[in-house]
Structures are given as C-alpha cells and as structure tokens.
Amino acid sequence: MIGKNIFAACAFAVSLISVSAEPIFNVKDYGAIGDGVAMNTKALQAAIDACTEAGGGTVWMPSGEYVAGTLQLKSNVTLSLDHGAFLLGSQVHADYPIDKLRPAREGNSECFLYAEDATNIRLEGLGVIDGRGKPEFFPKKAGPGGKDNRPRLIRFENCKNVTLSGLTYKNPAFWGIHLVDCKDVHISGVTVRMRNNHSNNDGFDIDGCENVLMENCDIEAGDDSICLKSSLNPCRNIVVRNCKVSSHTAALKFGTSSSGGFIDVDVSNCYFYDCPMGAIKLQSVDGGRIENINISRIVMDNVGSPIFIRLGNRGRIYGKNTYTGTKILDAKKSEGASVGSIQGIRISDVVAKVTFPDRAQDAKATYKKAKPPASEELTEREVAQAGPIMISGIPGHYVKDVVLENISISYPGGRPAEDAKRIVPEDITRYPEQYFFGVLPSWGAYVRHAKNIEFKNVTMTTRAPDERERIILDDVEGFVDE
Image 1: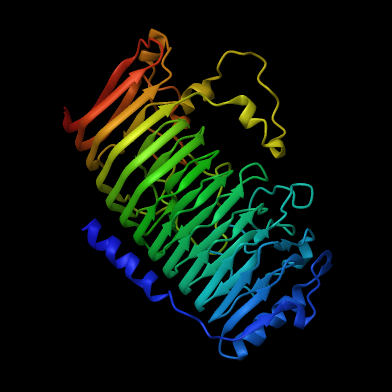
Image 2: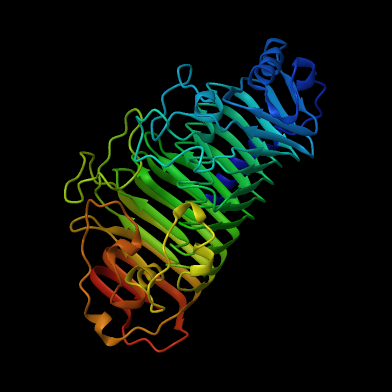
C-alpha cells in the first residue's frame, strides 16, 4: 500500500519538469528597488498581476534586497529569486492587512506570501525569503484576535500543483510555511532557518493536503519542523525522504490539530538531530484516524523522547482563527469531537541517541528570555523530556497494530528507584506533549491502553545505570518483544 502511495505521490512531480518558454517579468521593470530600504509591495504585486494577466510566466527577482508586506501569488506564476536576491518582510504590522485574505482556520490570518484557490504556483531559485519577524517588532500574543497579530511567512490555501524548490526560508514572526487543503505539492531542496528567531516558528505545517512529496530539504525550526495537521480534511499520500531536520519541539509531528486524520504516510532516510522535546510524535486527539504509516531509515542524534504515539480526546472542532495554544484549555473536558483511532503504524531501522536538553543550546533562543536554572541538577522537565518510547491510548480506546522493528536506542539513564514508583496521569483531554506526563516509571518504553504492539529486534540500552523497569505495560493486549 505504501509503495503504491510513493509512486502516486511522485508521478505528479515528474509532470512538472518541463522546458519553459513562458514570459519573464523583471520586478525592476515595475518599479522595485532592491536597496533594503524602499517598500516594494506595490511594485512586486504589479509584476505578479501582470504575469497573471499574461496567462502566466516567471516573476524574476534579480540580486538585491526587496522589502515588502503581504504579497498574493496567483495561478500560473513562478516567483524566481536569483542568488543574492532577498525578499524581506516588512517589520511594520500595518503592512500585513487581512481584509482581502481568507480567514485562517487555525491561528492568525496575517502572512507574508499568500495564495488561495490557485493552480500551478512555484517558488524557486537560490535566493532567500526572510520574514525578519523579530520579537521587538512583533511581540508575542496569547492568541488570535489582537490588533498586532504576528504574520506567518507563507499561507497557501486550496491550491493545486504547488512547487517549492531551492530557496532559503528564514525568520517568520509566527509559523513558517503553511499549506492548507493543497493537492499535488512538491517541496525539494529547500533550506529552512527558523530555530532561534521567535515563538511558534514551525518549519512546515501541512494541513489537510494530498499528494505531497518533500525531499532533500535541510530544516532547522524553533517549533515543529515537519508538522502534518488536519484541522478539517485528512493529510493523505504524503512522502518525506532524504531530509535533515532539527527542532526545539519535534522533528516530525502529526497533530496537534487532528480532526481529519493522517492516512498513507511514508517517511524515510532522514536525519533528526538536536530535538530536545522529542523526535517523532504521532497524535490523534481531535477525532481523526491515523492509519497506514511507515517510518523507516531514521538516524536520531541528541534528541528527547524518540517516539511518542498518543490517542487522546481533546476533541477540538475547528472554525475561523481557532486558538493554537495550551493555556486557555480546560484540561478535564473534551471540546466536543469524538475520539479518533490509531492503527497500522510501522517504524523500522532507527538508530537513536537520547540526551537531556543542552542548556547552552536552549540559551541561543534569546527571545525566550529564560533564566538559567538555579542548580546544575536536572529539573523535572529536563528529565521528562528525555523519556522513553511512549505509546498510549485512553481507557476504552486503544492504539492498535504498531510494529517497531530493527531499532537501537541509547538512553542517558541514571534515574533512581524512586522514579519507578511514579504514577502516570491519564490526561485524557489535555494538549499532548510527552513531558506533560512527567518522569515515567520505565526507561525504555511505556505502553498503555494498546493492542497488538510488536517490538522486533528492538535494542534499548542506558549509558548510566537506571533503577526503573525497561518496559512497563498497562492495559495492553497482544504485546510481543522479540
């Protein structure tokens, strides 16, 4: 099944490769000034509009620094940046109006590059798209609705035949590249640098998209790096391969928005590194189903909890500008959606080194203004972040049919016998982060409310003696450890 999905996902990409004789629209011919000072929103939009009116072509940005606010891409437009070309986001909030944009289903509506209902749009070249979203210009807000909401870098909604190739994307004020309900998407050879810029700096948020191929990318994000979401529709037929990924929060995440689910996803031959809050997180908490997932050939270095699979019942129902955070949620009450399902997960050929968070690395995120810990001893959170594999449903709703095969994980260890007595909360409706469950009573794997879980050639070791159990099972049927 997965093999067929790879073929289907790749077939559309081949069709996009052709020799183009379409017209070229030099942005300088429309009054753009690449001096890093002049405001170029009108000039750049004029070039895009002229390209559209001509039936399509390439909007060419020669070397220079072009400052602009919100730009709307349209059908049959290629935005091509030469080496040395920088498309720079304005640092004035008023340059990101939302009156002509479709309201975002999740989070703020403001964005730098925008498209809706477009076909055949392409971002390419050797240049840089830099949101310049520093906290001093875009202060952190609690949620949508404020007058100074932070703009994300890119938001494309309901678009088809989308190609992102070769550019570098940097420094959004909010999320990075957000694709919503798009089909036939090819992301190749892009560089993402969003690690220590601002809060919520996800790399890619791929929401309810179909037929997506992401390959040969180099991603450093502050929040989730590759994040599949399903605020309404399922993510289906997704292929990720040959990528280098680091993140403060997660290298690969399904959720947290998970109404539609995640079906037929293949991730292979990737390097996940410097991910202190965890590497792989597969979550269904808003009623969607996760099914037919294959993750293989993954090397993890300097990561927190390596694998977190969570079926919960937050039950969020998404509307316009749904809040994305955790602070205002009622942790004891579902928001209304039914419980989803997780089954048919295979994770294989993984080598991982789990470590406690690197405080020096964390300190590079200067926007957090975090005070250094008073003691050199590890905090409760730091220990919890470097937890074991966790696979957990909720009472009456089980995670099913999960196979972990040919996996080698090295844990830091070093925890005392007292930790083996810890009680793990159910947290049925809470926003799911593994460290929220606290330090777990096992060091290798904790499995709860699950059926048909197979560990095949799974080697787990500690670098220091640990007095907890290797594996703890709670309400588990059909567990195999061979």
